[in-house]
Image 1 (cartoon, rainbow, N blue to C red):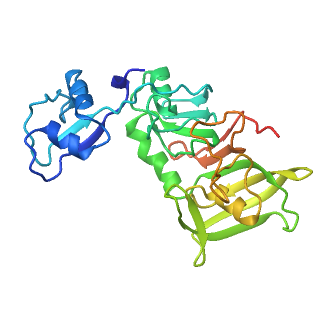
Image 2: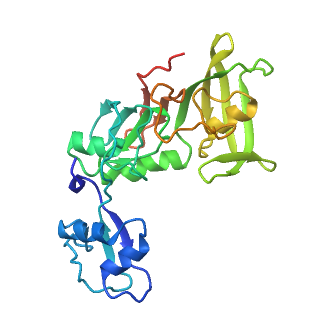
Image 3: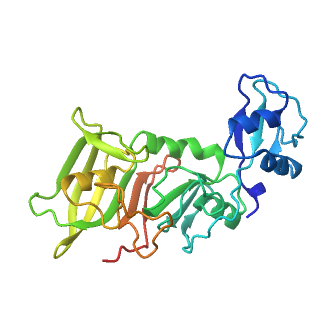
Length: 293
């Protein structure tokens, strides 16, 4: 899809001594060279608050709202397709494949669930109401229109959505199920990992066993809280890291720069259930994806 179908990022220019908006952008985003900013400006991909293109000579002014469109050159296609499960005038429910990020980040702009759905539906107002990790597959809910978005976002914020996951991991024969795991989770090292530490619990997961196959079991996971990587950290902490997880319990030294599509993380967002804030009716959605042994 073209970048024009995506919502732009926004920057309010910080305090500084720059002569032009271009000078400010170059200093603020050192990873993007001046030639790239000039090329984007020439194509109208840097704009003011009203969407009017900003020229390379536009004078700098502190607080000026600048809209710009993120672009990644030669973005690698992700060879898996999402599946739309439900759509009405308020919600869009999608099965996300493994490896596909929900939102643009880092090297992913066009190859994201949001970008694909905007292209597919022609609706630039789509916004994910919640997110799952790039390496996790399964259900993601999108708001279709701004007028009712807040009501659905509030459900997740107030923990009024019952979420069910499935994972395949090592057998935990020493535990009695169903089992409740609570712990205190904080940021770890490197920055993208989390860790469990001593202290008052700020995370909680309910765990049951759905299927046993020798040394591997299929678990049903119901997170009460929504900490980053919570399910991965909790199972790894119990001694059963999720199959295909190269972050936990230790960061794999063999971790490749490119994804190994033959070894997906065996974690699936299986189900979502909530009372619809508009109709007061119970809504329940189930993923059609399956975790393979």
